[in-house]
Structures are given as C-alpha cells and as structure tokens.
Amino acid sequence: MTGRQEGGTSPPAPAGTPALLTTLARWAAQLDLTQVPPRVVDLATSQVLAQLAAIRAGLAHSRAAALVNAFGTPWQADPRQSAAVLATLGCWLNLDDTAYAGHLAPSTVAVPLAYAEADGLSGAALLTSVIAANECAARITAAATLGPLRGQSALHTHLGGAVAGRLASRRAPAREWVDALGLAFAAPPWPVMHAFLSGDAKLLHVLPSIRTAMDACDAAAAGIRGAADVLEHPRGFLERFATVPLPETVVDGLGSRWHTETLSFKLRPGGPGIDAAVDCAVGLHREIGDATITSVLVDASIYTIYAGRQAERYLAGPDSPISALLLSTAYPVATALLTGDLTVADFDTPAVREPARWDLAARVRLRHDPAMTRRLFASVAPFGAALQQAGERAKPWLRQVFGDAELAALASLAADPSNAHGPRPAATGSGPDPEEFRHADKATPARVTVDLADGRTLSREQVIPLGAAGAHTRGHHRELVRAKFLAQGGRAGVADALSDLPDLPPERLARTLRLALA
Image (cartoon, rainbow, N blue to C red; front, side, top):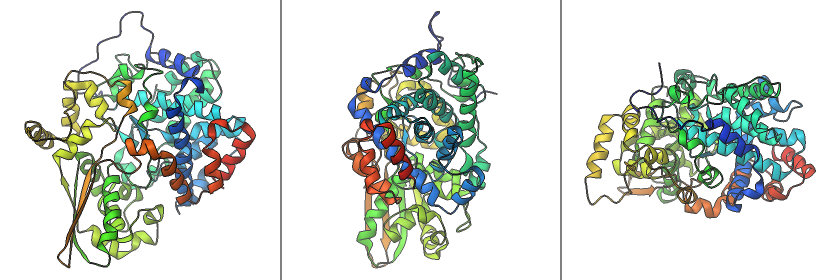
C-alpha cells in the first residue's frame, strides 16, 4: 500500500539525468560558508543558539532524568551517542525550530554540534554543516510534505538531516553522501500516532532516525552501497510517503534558494498552530487584570483545529500525557491568560495540576476561521509553498487531511470578491522562486476573545506568531533567540560568544558549547 492515493505520479526525469541524491550530495559535499549569503549565515547562527536553548529546556523538565538515565548526558566520548542524546532532548517539548519544510533542528543542529565538540571544529565549519544539513533535510521533506506525515511525525526529516550533518562535519566525499542517504532512506520510519500521543514514546521519537542515519554513515564509510535513486524511483521513498510527490524540490535552486531562510524560531513550548493564540493570550493577560474570565473563544486556521483534534481524545486533565498536552490549544491558552506566559514549567508539576488552569481550559472553545486558513495556505511555511507548487494536484491531499467541509468553506470564501486574505494556492504548478523564500512567512493566525464577569469582552488577533518566519523575525531573530536561551537558564556570556559563531576558533567553540549546556 502506498502513501499516495489520488495525487498522481510526477513525470519521470529525462534520460541521463543524475539521481536526485547524486545532485544534492555533489552540491552539499562541497558547500563552503563563503558561498552562503550573510543573511542566511546569520539565521543559522541564531538557529544554533535557539536549539541549545531547546536542549536546555529538555534537560530542565522532570522527565529528563529518565532520558539521561537511559542514554547518558549530552556530551559523550562517542559523538554518535552525543548526537542521539542532543537530538532527543532538544525536540520533545516542541521547542525545536522549523522551516519549510520540517522540524529540522533536532538533526540538522544536534548532529553537527556533537561532531563539532568531538572533532574540534571551528564555528565556521559548524555553521557550514548546519546549513548543508538544513538544505538537504528541508528539501527532501518538502518533496513529501503533501503526504500522510507532517511536522514532528515526519521522522524521515532526520534521516536527511543527521546524515548530512555528520558527513558535512567530516567533509566526506559526495559518493559517501549518496550511499549513506540511500541506505538511510531504505527503511524510513512511519510513526504510530496512538503511541506517539498516549504515552511517553514522544520522548524518543527522533531517536530511531538519528541512529539509523549514524549506522548508514558508518556503513557507507565502510563501502556499503545505497540506492542513489531511492527518492524518486517508482518503488521508492516518494511513492510511499507522498500523496502528491514534488521531487523537483530536492534539487531546484541549489545555491540560490535557501530553505534556511524560511526558519521559524519556537519561543515557547507547545504544538503546531498554537503560537499565535498563546501570543494573543499573553497580551490579553495584562488587560484582564483581576477580572474573572467566563468564556474564551479561539478562532484559528484549520491547522490549529487539526492538531487539536489529534490530541483531544488523549486529554485527561492533569493526568494528560505530555505529548497530547503539548498539541492541545485549551490548556496552553488558559495558562497564558492566567499567568501571562507559557513556559516549560507549565507542562510539569506542580503547575499542570493546578485546578484553576483546567477550570479555564474547560471554557476554551475553538472555531475554524476559513479566512485564517486561506492566509495559512498563502504563506510559504508550513506547507503553502508545496500547495502553490502542486497547484490542482494538491486537492486530494487537502481533502485527505482536512476534509470536504472545510474545503467547501474555503471555496466559498474564494468566490467572495471582498476577501483580502491573500491569494489561493497557484493552480499552475509553479514552484517558489528564491525571492519568495527570502521573504518567506509562516502565518498560523489566531484570534482570542474573552468574556469577563464584569461585562467586558476583550479580543486580540495575531497572524504571524512571535518568532515565526516573517519580516519581524528577519529583523530581530538575534534578540529573540538570545531571550529564548536566557529564559532556559543559559548564560549571557555564552549567548554573546555564540553570536560571533562564524569567527570562533575550535578551542573556544568547544569550551563555549560545554558551557552552553552547563
């Protein structure tokens, strides 16, 4: 049984065209930081600090003790094990940073960090590895983003990110990249969402991908060969993992279209689509003061509604599995309205057992706003670029994921000439150009309306969450991720040192990385 149902098969490449992995590997293996635009280097520099903050957060939660007991501390003699631990700690609280397409940082940052510390890399070499890994992982993920798996469930992202992160760090030849990627994608993971949401499996969800990637690198170095055409072959990865395959995304615009430019920085824990609602709730907290909240309405896009539906059947108040709680909307919004923030501690005891939070969470109602969904689809991330590239071919995927009722609402809105919420996804099947990525945004809109016992009604709306891809983040990502790092107990001196990452010599980088997780 294949992942694709109705989307159709992409036309085959002309005879003599190199396999996708061959083209991608030849480019990534020779990438040098001098070839990367400074603005992209700056974003990757912030990505490293942001992911170190996420790793610190993962270590701070009470559940981290079990992870450390099982797998050890972040820095170990074997960089393969360090990579696995760093990746695991940095993503399970949904504080890992994303791009178009995928949750990249658990592999594209964690693996290069492990090898930078073990092999004594310079800051420039670390950043080169991170960017190469970003580009490989994001492109492969984008090729299958119109498929059954997305977000953190798209664990194949980390096969590409971990292989590329390790081999770029060690400057392996392109042939080794092709073999390692071909071997890694021979058996990509397909998660069981019930296990993902009902217990503690989410704490380990990236581990199999990282370990498979490390084994594939070892095997390729020993001369074991992989299938170069594993992605695009009629019986390959995209056949199984994409409803609407976009193989051209893997190699289009190498060196000119930078997926790293689509980075969004996760500033608070919580699942996809809740960030704008939480930002609104934080702002409303100051206006509410001591008043009693009687009801809360969250209008949001289908993305937020969809994620909440996945979690709701697993919620059990204070006894909810943390994996389901992170995906929910009601508890995070209620917490932010009551406290004025949403932190890692809010997903741990004793905070998660406070009756007032659950009292208010029970009064939070979600409602789909089709105009917000159209704004979501018009943005590059999380999947708007894929919809525009696929054009009419995307309809089966949209129907499969979101259902006919929501799509009918969107069609009705599209016919309304007063609609000013951005264009529909292109029907021509045209791919995004480099300038679109340079100005990428990630709109996951929300509006939070609260009714108060004193008769007031307060409302706030936000289109692009704080830290998500967009003009504000492009101008302020350094300050945003510095605040994220300090909020997780990181030292200001470490943040300052890592802001100069491109110029850090090996000795100073190794010392700074150790201090970053001290």
